[in-house]
Length: 354
Ligand SMILES: [Zn+2]
Image 1: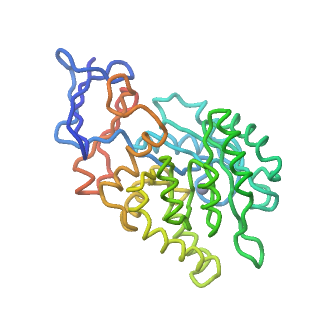
Image 2: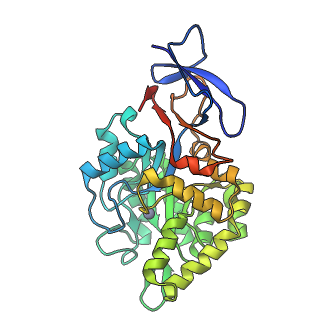
Image 3: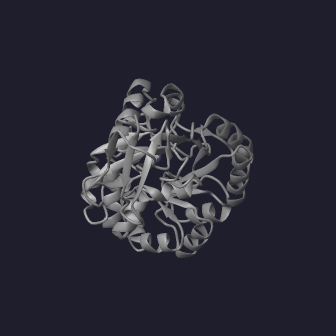
């Protein structure tokens, strides 16, 4: 049965493609089913900072059956690509292996996080001294699916957040990951650490509340990624209390982000939406809307939760002949009516209607 899809992207020219197996082909002959007329199309939503392993930020072990359900639910809500930023165990990696591609989003993932001794929640990350980081990154890259996740800084009692690694150590981590075809993502909420990470060549800055304009220029120059996770930061501020030292630091960070998001996109940074356990990946539209509230243009916001991720990861452009037949259809143009991102009307994954 031939499925023909009318694809009207929020920006760019409308096109028509047929599904053959799991791929797009040029339309030819009669189609038995035609979908997408009068709808708007994205290649899918993207959660660029998920932790499929668990449902909330309680630092417990992953729960495999629930992670499977979250992966399926994400797809049903239009999420066709996840970048999982790791956990204390390999739950997400097992989800990738357990489900067929058509049953879940595409998933790139880090496995177990790496931190300096005492540099994260006790017993959570794999603790690695800086001199051993390069070797441990090789192991982590082999365990993961395209990513290694580092904890860049962590509060120490009485002094606030402290860097876990030096710039030279971070650079060696990036080089080691590259030997296994992996990228490096870094958790950072401290003031000085984003600059170290950007200078070291780290590919994705997670939270990154204190990126500077110089950092943005450098990160944009190499088309790097920044996943601010604004809902996560707002939630953490509420948990810490606005008047606590940690809460005030994060408030300062959010003020910095507010002035920087649009500049970052214009500089070439791939600003991406990530849920980071405020809701599940199925809720990623909420983070996208939050990015707009903090200063992304609406068109930039739609890219941040969709097309920008394909470009950032160097994947083939969506909606091209030969690429996977994935499309998510919305009842109105998300650029003029952003709320529709929460309510796709149809999801096609690997050529099949979900
Ligand atoms: Zn996270």
